[in-house]
Length: 249
Image 1: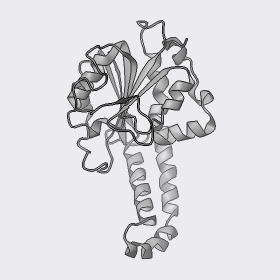
Image 2: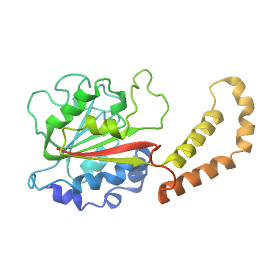
Image 3: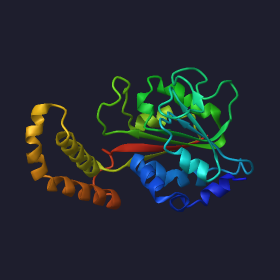
Image 4: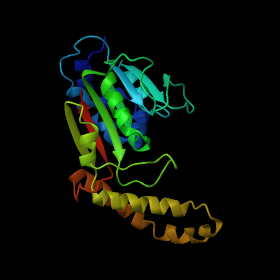
């Protein structure tokens, strides 16, 4: 039976097939590359039994393969099923949204990736995460900072590190890590600009597609510079792509 100590020793890239690894890294590389950080910092409270992980706002459950392949219990929760069968269906702004009773201390780990900005009553959600986590359990939360208005009209907030410290103040430890720098943000915006104009919605914009193709080397340069900035941590982390928050109950 897998334990927390086992999880800390897992090499995720070896555990997954190349296609699975590529898919996870494409969806949210920061989460994928830092799963081991969250589990490595779990304390010794849970030394026996299997690890139970709740993925809040799981969507199409891109992390289920990773979790189940290494022998842990995965629970996917969202407001409605989208092409997949959910373990838990619950309205995110409801009371007791993460389980069907008032019993807390259920999960070893809770994952919340690119969801918090879509929750109107965000404090109720974070308090509920705290309630259902076991003592010593870990939470992995990612949020965007430099991101377009999306999933309209259910896109409510962008959070600063100062606000995140207050929102997660019930937890014993809170680590806030910026994802990327302002250079990576600029590169990301250029990439989005190019793809939006290479596949335009308005018919008349198709007349400009040859122009965008002609200056496409700019896109390649933007991609290269963005990756260099990420690798070497160039630029200011005060204007990142987003943040990852690692919390411990």
